Image (cartoon, rainbow, N blue to C red; front, top):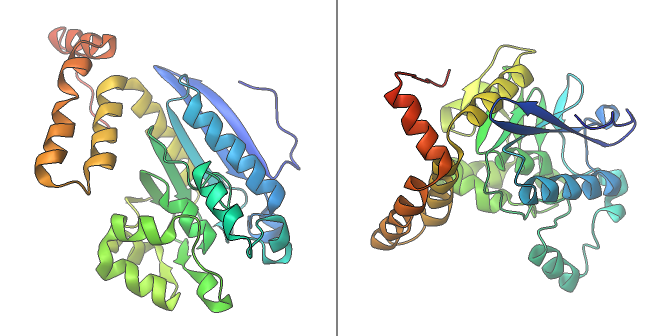
Length: 272
């Protein structure tokens, strides 16, 4: 466990040692503005996402918002100048190449599991951050919207990329075009949310899932996640070839050897 982060830090990052690995809890800590992201918060988010991407000891990340009202309401429009020079196309291209984005680290493609959990407003850039979760949870009072549609601000932190891939054109395009708010139940129905939790239990469930992920053999999980992410838009034959490359290195890995030994010893693990 790292040293406690000051409570006024806009992003609170906390590693947790668990059986089989380590999780990284990332909390957007600006509840006074519904966890809207300003320049300082974006910079800290970028640091956190780079840390998670580069530190091999970190197995799972959990992103959530402080307080009871919001996961993240998007960019802080009162501090827009601190987020990005919206008129500088060259700066935008440079940021894209280095994984940055107005919301901080939103263009880093994470190759280890990320869980996002919403307990309230999940709007605009906040919805984009939510979509970066490979597993997405929500409490029943959560709401979701491309709310920036109302103000003429585009989706530039992955929204137009992730939404169609996650929920298909039929559900993504109405959200993108209208900015309509949808409930957690509706988000669950269209596949934006994997699981609905009881009110107040979202973070606990996310951390439980993270712990269980850490208990599973690591190498096969990472190989399958990579194959799914990188192969989803390849022609079928190329996607199957990409998947096939996983066999030999994974079957020779220490984590798979231990997993097979556990099976042979009669141990059974079911994710709950």
